[in-house]
Image (tube, helix red, strand yellow):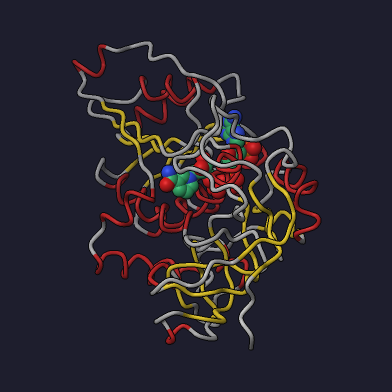
Length: 340
Ligand SMILES: NC(=O)c1ccc[n+]([C@@H]2O[C@H](COP(=O)([O-])OP(=O)(O)OC[C@H]3O[C@@H](n4cnc5c(N)ncnc54)[C@H](OP(=O)(O)O)[C@@H]3O)[C@@H](O)[C@H]2O)c1
């Protein structure tokens, strides 16, 4: 097969970072993305060329296209952090040729017919792993393992918000299987039953008028000392200040555009409370190689066995994506997938 030198991609219109803080969800995708043919760079040593099958739209992608994520955009390059596809060419990683892999778009982005990735960051997939699971097998699943491990350091119980998210659901299932008691915080009551079935020991609904009282009761009963936070709003800050001495607020996402106030600074001094951040892009390279391999095996086994599954809200072709991503994302009923 002749190796393509260009590919059809959702290309970034701008490079670098945004000049001002960006909202989580852009008002439209058209100011940020352009559907066009882009050049594929020659493969550097250790890189592979992948024919993309599916790629998810993660919250991080929405921040990234706007220039509000932790790494700069490259103008004219495809967006999309991860996906599943088949390796069609390699420079020094021939063992992957023909393999279906989960990959990170480390050379070029995944919202394209073809993507360049580092072979070291490709995960060859078992046949039992469905494409939809393979497409979203890295960013959220590896984070789920890392964050549940962090939660366990605080004891048996922990709090997680945005618990109905794809990542939240992965963490609930994993925590249940590890004998932990997660307290799930959500904003829509209709998700409560499903989250209990997945493994939540308690479900608290922020839109409920009794939220603060119910939260206080759950905290008294279960004594959680880790708050896994993907929201970063005032309700989260208030919840943290209701937690016991030694509690850690682990910020790993910013779904809310609200800026919370820290109303009880004395708790950092007198109750040894802490705030910390988590980013997979820092955690993964810092993990020892045998730990990385074990986590990758674990996540693949959980998908292959059906212990985990990726919910899909919609599948869009490249030419449907610019207009279709945001309406499908707003349904919050699973991942929006791009099928190039
Ligand atoms: N730091 C890292 O390394 C890392 C790695 C992976 C993921 N993440 C983060 O993890 C989070 C979840 O990712 P995902 O892919 O699982 O997301 P997802 O499936 O798209 O779900 C998003 C969730 O956020 C909730 N949400 C949105 N806006 C909210 C608001 N203003 N207040 C409260 N809840 C709100 C939604 O609730 P509704 O259903 O009620 O709309 C939904 O449950 C994201 O913040 C993502 O950036 C971080």
